[in-house]
Length: 549
Image (tube, one colour):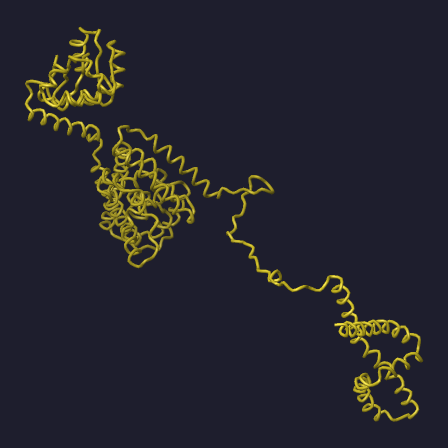
């Protein structure tokens, strides 16, 4: 059996002397305790040294990616192909498949082979002759640095300092342009104030001023290459009736020179923006897809570099740029800000005020993944950013629609989301179950209640009937005596008082008088008398019950 062993200095091929010892995996490490014991197990057959660090890096990257490098292919053809009947022990299964496919060599990978490789690595200095320890360590360190640079892809295309400088210059140009345009409008406004209100676009305004000069030239000037026909006609009409003052040619020359500066800076700004867009798509394509070129460049500039930004968690990316508001909120114990520079992203801008916080949090989480993928990943495509942006847009639509639809009515119509109200039935304790005393029978309760109610009604109705009975005989006496109308008033007052007094003393006499009166009164008494009889019977029954007790 042959063993392929990779080092920082080159490829080594060993021959296993005693294959039976490989079967004892647990005790194999004892055979590599000393260089003498190790030489009894394996023997160096061939060593192919790398010429320089570039060749070592190419071989290492090919091994990492599971590919068959040129130098390894040459070694295998030279040494192993002569003994094709023997198996080749390797550490990487993927590489073994490639070797078997291209060179038709049988490769072996097992726990015994992994233990064998570990033993060879421990006694590498004694097994590989002609390589001092210092040289091997220096080669290992150089190859490690080269490989890490290759893995992180620190190429000129990945330098993010250009983005930091470009976005800073772009912000400075915007400030200067605003100052220059404001000065130009104010300066030329003394001569032709109406032009500033008609032309709102700053670049078109400066180009128009540059072409017009004195407002008296507007009538014979063609502005169709700068302005639409409607605005051009409006400018010509305003120039005829302008309220501006007259200025000298020297003043006009200085204003035109300022307009030239504004036009040049605007053109340079557009060129710089295109450059920034291209650099962002080259360095951070996924971040650019997620938040846009300007916001992505500002995030990188704020963090210092793309690698520093990749080290930040999503919560920091969310409030990056709002540090002042954050510390003020922490100091005053108020709500912390929900967004910083990420607020200017298009996804956050198109949401309602209620959902801005949610979307900014989700966007920051996905952007943090995109930044790490751009900074540390090997691929340079923007597929991940496109997928995550599609997910965020779907989530945004769901939040805008609230995900609720009506059950009744049309299916397309959205339901109204009411505030949640907690409704729970509060059970009250019923004390009736605590009593152990015997209750009155149901039949007795049913009999007593309606009778008592009738008796009460009779008592209330009785005085009205009795008053009517007592008043009738007194009216006869009035007719007999034939008193004057003046004396009748005090008598009526006495009648109002007397029924109450007579009711208590003469109940039996009233019954006899009622029998002698009109049939209507007899009917009324007939309705009342049975109720009175029932009450008297009940009273007698109660007395008997008491006597029995």
